[in-house]
Structures are given as structure tokens and as C-alpha cells.
Length: 420
Length: 168
Ligand SMILES: Cc1cc2nc3c(=O)[nH]c(=O)nc-3n(C[C@H](O)[C@H](O)[C@H](O)COP(=O)(O)O)c2cc1C
Ligand code: FES
Image (tube, each protein chain N blue to C red):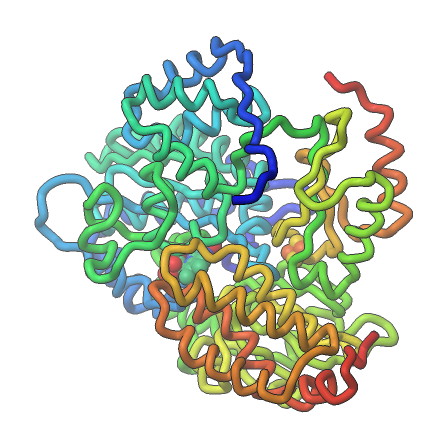
């Protein structure tokens, strides 16, 4: 199977700069700066159908095209490496194996958008990825692939690394910009969108690590080839999936978009752990509604997963066996989101702890039948919060209500958790 | 009002040389509050009150703004912390692989709870989510070292190991 992002991986260590270059790395950058205009690069990314890998799946080329063309003054590119959503570890896996495709992708993106200053916003605890990136940035500069007058083209760009002080909300793109500016990371109102008014009030593009790291392949091999990597006609490219929970292989893997959930779990994931039976999974990171075995034939691609009632999200698949209490799992997720609410808007700040209290009560055996309706109302109303944190938090609760209402009722009637 | 004693306000004696060095380094940087506070946190292991006043003074911002930032981000601490910070992940992947048993074992062995520090300042314990290595669940970290596939026995080994280590 052709690999895009994991093509250069070496067992147990990061690829070196020399190896990356020898295996065709930075060829896309040479090509773009010698033969292509910024518009050509942007066009290739639009045609490739590349969609954001940070959770929302927004078309990448389209996002770039929102940056005003002839506004004078600086504009910025930010690579989002906050990756704090439970169940997600793909950006870490990528950067621990290879920091160069991100650096190359960022220079290409910067060239396409006209950026001279880019940032990588990286979560704390990711010491190795940060060290790899620092190293890669120095090597790229040394080789004239980053910095002033890159490859003699006249295009110049710097990349700075910013270490996050740690809060899940910093991954939300407007909160991230506040964090970079050095204030509390509350999200900002949209519009104006970052592409128009972002960091320091300037046009800004925020993209995920995996999104940007795909750009060199697209520029080097063309949009059609990239699109064709997916197994569904609507899909395009490969995707990093990071399985965890009760399956055998819990390592990050690069798979074509469009493989079905069942194919992924029984194939590359190696099936369930011995003696365990599949009950459900989180398909794409902590904020996505659950899938069950009934969803095994859903192609894991943005549109197909959305049609089936969930979201592809980050590709973090957390698999639960039959012994897993879904009320307990949902409570665990809600605890996370309630704690990470930034407190800026009232429905999120007050609503998430309320949902957490109800789930705690049900799990402890003190739930009442009315609680189910109250949960349902919260799933509805918490869609109207200031940013996407609370709607994301309601993803698993919605899944619980839709697929496991019986299990909630069993907790309530037995007045205890049936799994303990 | 209750008649509980007001929270004790201590004026700490802190050598601010290191804090001044950190501020010097970032003085001209656009958006320097965060790197300055991160530098001070790294130097002292927490952000001492006199350092807050110093930063307010030298960067010309209100202490309240600095507190707003310090209390928002997980990295910053207003009190001294243990030499060894033990973090156990309670994210969902770790939860379904038995993270709570690991947490309880640490509680039992160290006689401290979440976000608490042992009186000898050797250990601080924290429940966190998620550490971004869910494939190795359940996960624990001690300072920068990661321990995957945690078991009750591994908890005991870790504590035995770190009990031997020097306090610097
Ligand atoms: C609460 C919250 C947390 C987020 N965390 C991340 C994150 O850690 N990494 C990321 O790339 N995107 C995260 N996002 C999505 C970003 O806001 C943004 O959509 C994304 O970085 C855009 O990049 P992409 O188009 O390449 O996916 C988060 C969104 C929300 C609402
Ligand atoms: S859930 Fe524990 S490392 Fe991700």
C-alpha cells in the first residue's frame, strides 16, 4: 500500500535530513519555487480535495483562498499541533518519525499564501516532536530551504515554535491565536474569520500538522494521484488513524480514506484483544458520537462517516469491548470536557458540569428516568455555545442516548452500574 | 462570613536574579508574557508572588492580567511543587484499560490525592488527560519519562525507583 506521510519512516528512530532528501524529500519545494506560481500551488491543493485533518475536515485549498490577495502587510501561517483530544496521538506519531514533511509543507503553504512568518503551536508534553522540529528547522535553514531567499527564489519565510502552556481549548483556532498573543486562550467571535483577521489582527491560516504534511506529496505528484489514493470516489488521500482500547495493534497507521470501519478493525488493527468482543468505538477522537458493529460497513471518510451520524474527526479510534460501561465511558469524556471548558460562555461553563453531574448520578445508581430527557435537552441546547467545544462534548452523549438508551435505563432501574 | 482564618499571606523571600534574566531575554519580543512566565515557571518550578510583581513592573501590565493568565493554563503553578511530578492519564483510552486502579494505587502508596504534594516536596501527583500516547494505555509519566501499559506492580517499581533518586 502506498504511504504518503509514513513513506520515509525508519524503525525506532526519526528519518534523517539526508535520508529524507535522498528519498525525494524537498523535491516538491524545489519544483514549486522553480516552476510554479503561488496560485499554481493553491490550485493543486484545491484540486487534490485535501480536507483538514484537525477535526473539522474543511477543504484546505479553499481555506487558503479566503486570504485577501492584495492586502499590504504581514499575514501568518499557524500549524496546529495542540493535539489534546483523548484518543488522538497521530501528530505525535508523525513528528516522532519525520518532522521534515511538515517543514516542507509549511514552506509550500507559506509560498501559496504569501506568508513570511509561520508558527508551530505545540502542546506541552510533546518534547520529542518539538526537539525533532527544532532540529529539522535548523537543518532546512542551513540548506537554504527555509529562511531568507529560499533556493534563490526571492521568497523568504521563518518558522517559530511556540510551546503551549497547556489547555485543550488552545487547539481551537481562535483561542490558539490568543494563546500565541500571550493572553487567556478564550475563543474569539467569528466572523471575522482568521483568514481575514487573525493573529495580531492580520490574515492568518491555521492548519493541522497532518494537513500541512500532505502538501509536498500533492505538489510533487499532482492532485489526481493524491485523490486516487482514497478507496471511495468522494474521498481523497490517505489518513492517519490512531487506534487504542481493546484491539491488538494500537499504533498509528496510515490508511486510505474510505476503508470501512470493519476492515480497519479486523485488518490493520489485528482484531480484538484475545477473549474480548467488540461493543462500540469512538470513531474519530473524543468529540465524535459512537459507532457499533452495525457501522462496520461505513467507509471511514468524511462524508460517509457524517452520513452515518458521526464525524471522522481526528482519526482517533477508541475501541470498547463488551465489558465496557458506556455510561462510564461517556462520563469519563464529559469529565474531560467539563474541566477543559474555558469558562468564557455560560452555557458551556455551567452546562457541561451539569451533564457531568447527571451522568455521575446515573453511574452511581441514583439516576431517575427524567434524567434521560434532561440529557437530551442538553445535547440540543449545548449546540448553541460560543465555540465548538461544547457541541463536541455532546457528541458522545448524543451517541449514548441514540445507541445505548437501554443501558442507561438499566442503570436507573437496577440502581447500580450493571458492569460492576 | 465564616470565621475560618483568612488565607495566610506570606511574603516570600525569593532571589529574583533568574526571573530578571528571563525577562531580559524576551523584553523586546512581541507577545512576550507567555515565554516570560514559562521561563520563570521552569526556573523556580512555580511562579513566586514577588516574580509576578516584577513581571508586572517590567512589562508594564497589571498583576491581575498576569494572574488571569497564570490561573488559566495548566503549566503554571503558584505554589512550590514536588521534585518529581507524577502524572497518570485518565483519558478515555486509559480509562477503559483500568486507569482508575493505577490512580488509586498511587494515592495509597504516596498518601496524597490529586494535585497534592508530599510534605517532603518529593512528589506531586496529578490526574491528567490525555497524554497523547493512547496506544500504550494506561499511561503514566514522571517528569519527562513516559511509562506505558501501567500495572499495579509497575506503580510500586516506579515509587521504589524514585524514592532512591537525589532531590537535586
Ligand atoms: C475545542 C477544540 C479543540 C481543537 N483542538 C485541535 C487540535 O488540537 N489540533 C487541531 O489541528 N485542530 C484542533 N481543533 C480544530 C481547529 O479549530 C481548526 O479547525 C484546525 O486546526 C484547522 O486545521 P485543518 O483545517 O487543517 O484541520 C480544535 C477545535 C476545537 C473546537
Ligand atoms: S487517553 Fe491516556 S494517553 Fe490518550
